[in-house]
Image 1 (spheres, rainbow, N blue to C red):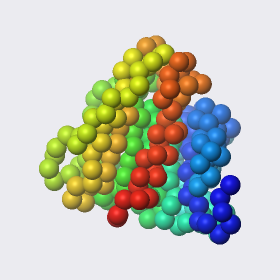
Image 2: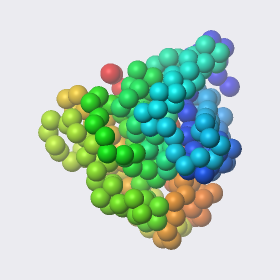
Image 3: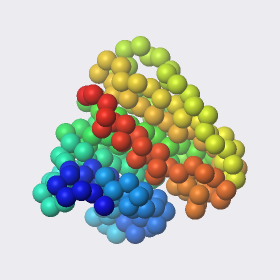
Image 4: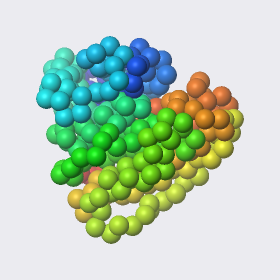
Length: 239
C-alpha cells in the first residue's frame, strides 16, 4: 500500500472497439501491476456509447471527459497532477496517441497497444513521451495498413526529431511460447521531440490480443509491466 500522504500516479486504461472497461481490465491485468507496485492506481474509463466502435477523437465532450477524470483523480485520490498517464488497446490505443498530442497538459506520457494513428490529421503540438506495443502478426492492424501504418505512426511520433536518426538502442526481448520475435527500440528526447519506445514483437499465430502470459501462452512478456516501467522512467527523467 502507498504511504499516507504520498502522491500517486494514475494510469487510465482505454478499451478498444466493441469492448468495455471490464473487458480491458481483465485482458490487461493492469490492476495487478498497480497492486504489486503500490505507487499508482489503474483507472478504466468507458466509451460514452457502451461497446461502441471508437472514442471521439477531437470531440469536445470527449476531451472534456478526460480533463474531468484527471481533475477528479487529483481531487479525490491523492493523484499528482503531473503524474497522469494513459494506455489503450486497439482503438483505445489510437485515442491515447491522439491525447498525447492534444492534451499534453493532462497526460505526462502515453502508450498504445496494438494500435496506430487514429486518422490523418494535422498534429501541431510536440506531444508527450510515447510507447507503442506492436505485433507484426496482428490481423486487425493488417486490415488498417499493417507495416505502412506502423511506419506512419513512428514517423508521426518522431516528426520533430531534428536528427531524423533511428533508435539509439535495440534490446532483444525474451522469445518463448507464442512469441517468435521481440525487441525493445528506444529513441531519446531530441530537440522538441519527446522520447519514444517501441515493443516490436511477432506472434506465432495471428492475434490482436494484449501481450501477456495469459493471452499469449508461454511468453514471459507483459505489456502492462513494460508500459508501467516506461511511465516510471518518465517520472525520473528531467523534463
